Length: 325
Ligand code: MLT
Image 1: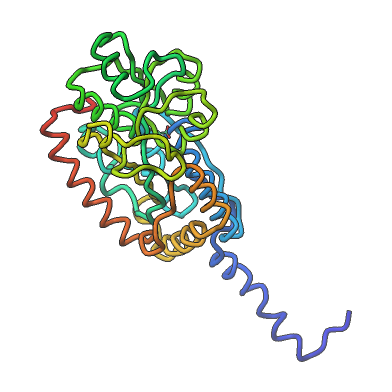
Image 2: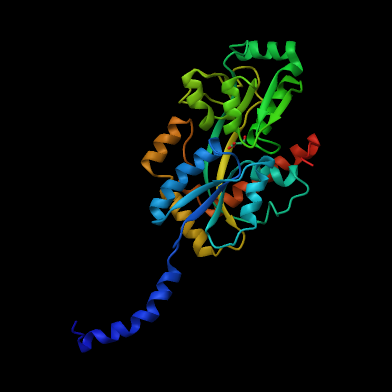
């Protein structure tokens, strides 16, 4: 090889420039997104779709790890205590707003332990039952529950989970307590609902739509003010005469506190690109939801929304006096 004199300065600079570039490149190894519920459930579904699309924009691999249990607090703790370098992230839902009040003793800071990266989506919920339950409409279900009371059970994913909050609203609309059966996520709970081991569950359309369409479970109502386009035959709780039984579940992406701002900005940019990905938008629509508007997939909008929702839930939980400890 002939090295000309003009090439020499560039060659001389190369050993210095390479490490600087390597440091600037983010990500230079796989990113882990922790889902604080079991695999196969609604948070897992949302996180996997987002992780795949973000990986494409970031030019790297984004893997999902399920750390379920304790109503979504174990997985959140893992991320709050991770190195703040952008390589360990969390996808969590409305529980981020309720857990700070519901749980008075936690091994991590549920308010200041995270940097919000951006909101992802808001998902309607459905009240669903096992295929053999002896009711086909909400009115028939209410009559059955009133007749059989504590013999009817209601699955959820633990205190603070969306299925738990939704179940509380159902029980307070009925003014009747039901026996609840907690799981590490509504993915495994759905298996038991389909198998007929549990009677009822309140869960997000991202976990229930395909089972409802396949007829493996019965749907009684959607918990949004208007019907869900992908499930047009299912009445709303409002139509069923339960106007206070309404809830939908927002999801967001988080990094540990003190993650450098430029990394949070890069992740937020990748999230915004992911939420415009055609395949993701189509799949979300199929499962009864839409990505948030681009301006909501930002750290500032996410922080403001999260804080406002936590403030909305605090007095409700305190007045109910139902704490997880
Ligand atoms: C899950 O992913 O299992 C659910 O989001 C749990 C829940 O909050 O109900």
